[in-house]
Structure formats: structure tokens, C-alpha cells
Length: 603
Image 1 (cartoon, rainbow, N blue to C red):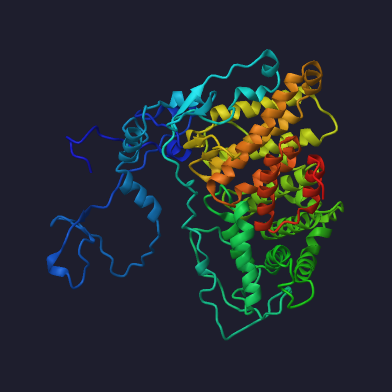
Image 2: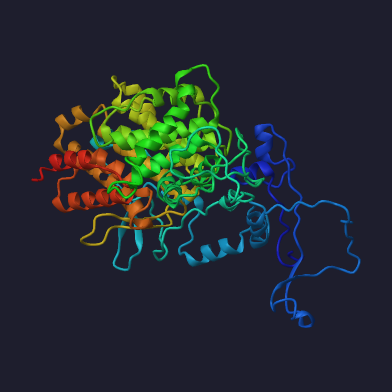
């Protein structure tokens, strides 16, 4: 606790402002709560009394230098005899309280803020940060970055309304020394270790519904985890632990390789945590998990413990789901919906490389049964996995999305302050709207103007965390800039913003008229498209050699790769796309043939 001479007294921000990560004034009630007409609640600030030191008298019991607790002799204690205690792990929150030293969002800088401010010269205010997004960056010999105002002709100004937003290379701030991109921290509150607790290894029982496997099924119950939504239990036994190592490998493969792209930008990692936990209780969901994992991992027949394992798991999952697929009035729970999402992703993987269409039953079921999800639920995780998968299919096959539920569900598309994941998801939804416009039968200029206007307003209102922490133009003989962002949500939001720019530039209704009138206008549009694709690829490459952000880069290449005319750039795009496909187990022969044909490559 600071003493009276250490600085001004600090008052915690109210709970509403803290939840939305916005500045809270010192009023009672605060101005934000008065403006919104809600109660202003300030939590009581409590801390443990810590003192770190050596206890020479207790070395046999304690380690030297361990944090000790010091209390006064008059400390009052609660009686605990005969009482049942329950401990809840709030380590992350407690650590943040002690590390920050205070809980407010007032004008007083924390120690971390002071270090960052003092180490970056010159000091730049937040208003300058926002304004600097409209300037280009040119590297100097000493690697300093200097903003250069962009002069645009009258033709260029009319090309793309979104130009008023955030042009390449995203920022003009002086950057620190390049560091590896920071990744979002996984949630510590979701724990897979509880799944197999209290499961008897001796007593086995078969529960309702077959598993498409060669293993017996263990009986037991999962331990209670108060941090997770309570699963709906349809039976008394659990499908985990599996007794066959090959199936256990498939579940692990799902968690390690299939789920991460869908969890990208989600600090709770809901797909990789909730789906396996619920699969432990549901045959249909477990079979869907095994089917998708086997589909992505059986390119060379490594899983030949029976013929076509992916198809077998898939068929059993469909059979278990058949009662709700065939009856439009039956009640559907979130476990069945999540299983249907995994089966739909299975279909997308199966048809993305060919001209055949998947059977419509699963997609029709999902469109008709989706509903507003509860925050943090399995249903929300399933929807957040399904939407990007449909976008991937739409781009790779040049087909409409056919997602008819978005308007009735009324997802949040506002520009009100929100956490980074919500902010990024708004741009994902907006990119869906743009794809609907692109693949729609009519090209209404009014609709185009509204789409471009929203994208420009979204980037101007984006949180400061969406500003890159480092930007460097590509060095000689390289093609992608280095762009580091603070977390995965910022990467996701910025990538989809750049994708929206690519789509809007390519499908500008004024483009044919402008290109016909001026060859210069056509060159400007082509350069805009290629630059945005390079920015997207640079964001992905700046994180690691291959990661979920490369999926967004591959989508950009599939959309606009044909606009690249320089052989060296084409080869770099081809290499990036190929390594991403190998890492995520895609079959992209159809797409790559299309690109090679557009580039004029000989076989």
C-alpha cells in the first residue's frame, strides 16, 4: 500500500467501466454510468498483507526468501471449527491486483506504463497514435520510422471509401527492437485433468449410443469444476478414458491441431477445452471429434485399424444425430448442435478440393436450429467455429455463404467499447456481409457504400491494443513486412479488416468506369490489393513460421493471388499457401491449379 508521501490516492474504477476496459472518472456515480443510466458499483479494494523476508527460526519448515504473512497481535480471526470450506482459484485476478499495485484506470501511470513510456522516444499521446494511422512509413538507414504524408490524386480518392480508414503499413509510430509476437494467454480456469477423475478402471459399462471405435468405454463421472458451465448429462457413464491408444491419439490430435485455428483470438480457448469435455459425456459429439480428427490425419492410411475410420466415425455420428435431423420440431441441445458443426466442418474439408456439393441436411439443420448463445457456452464456441469455416469454404470454392441466421440472431455489430475478442468478431461478421455482397446476384452501390463506411469507422474506433507494437518494411529480397501486434485478437481483427479492404477494392462498382477512363486508376487499385495481401501475410509470418493466422493469409492469397504479376512474389505466395495447407492437413490441389493457371505457370 502506498504511503501518504508516495503519490496521489487512487480510487478503483467502477465494475461497469472495468468490464468494458474504458476510463472511469472519480465521480460517484461516474460519468459513464450516469450517461448510460446504470448503477455505478465500485468494489471494495482488499489485499493480502505480504512481506518477503527470511525466517531464521523456521528454516526447517520454510524455504528462505519465501513470502511470509505478517499480522498484528490484535488481529481478529473467524472461527472455522465445524465449518465446511470451499477454495476457489482466482490466481490470475489476485496476481493482477498485487502486480498492478492499484485497480483504477485513472490518470496515474503504473510502473509498467512508466517504463514503456520512458523507453520509447519520442513520447506519443494516444491522439497522435490515432492520427498516425493515416501516414505511410519509410525505413531510414538507422531503422527509424518516419511518417510520410500520402498525396492522392482525385482518381485515387474516389476508388475506395475505406481508404479513409487505415492504409498500409498500419502505423507510423517509432517501434522498439523487434520481438516475437505476444500470444494470448490460455485460460487457467478450464482444466481437462478433471475429466478422468473418479473413473473406475475395473468397472466398464456400455452406455446408450454406439461409439465408432474398437475400444471399451469406461464408466464414472467427471469431477465438478465450478469454473465451467454444467454439462447436460444424458447418462450416468462417461466415454473417457478411452482404452485404445489410437483413438486417444485422435482426441489429442483434435485438441492440438484442429481446435487451435478456431480458438485463435479467444483467450478462453473454448473449442479446445469445452468440446473435449462435453465429448466425454456424449457419444455423438465424441464420434464427431474422432471423425474430424481422422479425416485430417489419415492421408497415408496411418489409422487403418479398420477400413476408412473417418467415414465410419462420421456415419455413426450422423446416425446418432438422425432423430433431430429428420424432425424439425424436436428439441435440440447445444451438444447436438456442436456435433453438427463438427460434421459440417468435416463436409467442408471433404468438398473444398472438388466440385461436388455436400448433402444439405447438416447445413439446413444448423441454419434452422441456431439460437442466441449464452456467453461462454458450448453453443457460442460452436458458432464461433462454424462461421469462419463457412467463410473458408466460400472463398476457396467461390460460392455464397448461405448463412441465413445472422440477421435474426442479431449479433453485436456496434462500435461501442468492448474487449478485443468481441471487437475482432465484429469485423468477422462484417467480412461475412461483404462476402454476401460479393457473391450476391445484385451489386447495389448503396450497399457497397455502407459496407465501406462501416469498415472505415470500425478501424478508426478500434481499441489502442489493435495498433501494432512494431512495423518494419520488408528488407531487400523479401516481400512481406514485419508487423507485430500485442495479442491474437488484434491480429485476427486487423487481418479481417485487411481482407475486407481487398474484397471492397476488387468489387468496387466504380472500378470498371475508372479503369476504362484512366489506366493509372487501374494500377492504383491493383497496387492497393497486392499491398493489403502482403500486409496480411506479414502479420502471419511475424508470429511464427506457421500458425492459425496463416489461414487468413491463405484466404487472401486465394482471393487476390491472381493480381500478382512478378514471378518472385508469386513463388512466395505459393510457398506460404503450400506450407499452411501441409500444416493444417488441407487438400488444395484445385485452388493451386487455379492460381497456377492465373499466373501462367507451366506444369
